[in-house]
Image (cartoon, rainbow, N blue to C red; front, side, top):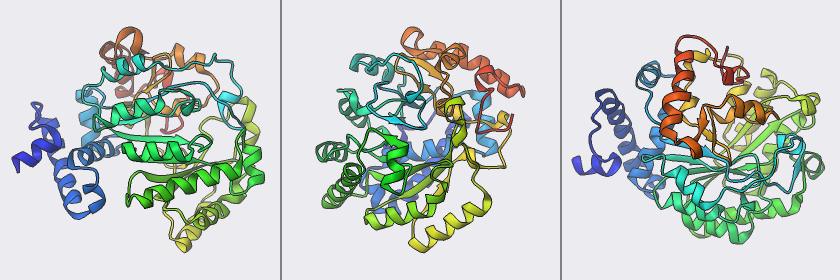
Length: 380
């Protein structure tokens, strides 16, 4: 048993509270690993990393929240923007409306950032840009997979060609969201300009087919749909469209606009409880699992219970922001101005101690930090 425990998490943790938490997660991990072949496909350390992330990020567990605010453990997850280049003009994306100079992250800067996270367990590698336009993107993913890091990405599948699909699946990518905000070609052309519906659908089908050819469960394919006035009537049709693709889909996630900034405020719409019920009914009919993002909930937790700061989001220039939900405001200058710091200039240890320290002091005392004033996930 000690050997298995060491393989999972490297042995006992010196902090008593952390050790108790890890043991609880390790017990769940071991049971899942023994019972489900899909996890055996990946390995027990990988599964512990995933279970640790799922236990910490967005937690509502009071004991874990108390631990987080008391001990403020150094981050073991991050989201990273590898480029701000994009060859599309999506209607809802801040990139379509902003004036930020395009930039690719170098592989050396990428490795420098990763070196700041010695116990990295989980990474998201999607920012405000077309990730595949960074020539080192797949190389970066492989670098993390060689460290047994769980990787979750979003992509519109314009550039996920058959060759790219093969590389992603063969290197062991874990989860990929299809960013698709339409059930029909007509709505797609309105929402996601710069890509072709038939090519995107073909790329999705190949991705699924190659995974089946290799007899693999991973990477899981999820679908992500941003609800607006232009497509809210297509939500049930969206589920039918996915069903008709005959691809293995783990879940479909619906969300509303994070921030209805000036250029797109006319597209904002709330998702009624009645609409959610209809979507769930259609999902049950088709046997598809669906979920709704935190920002669609009417019963938000108070901001003092926030735990999403455990996963910093890092811009292509190294600027660190507290979480990904601060994106899509079309106000990157505000995000940089209120940032806890810059990892490439100061290192993450300094950013964590100073910038994050001040932010967490304010949250813990019931105040709303300036960078959190526009929070859409928690009640202020």
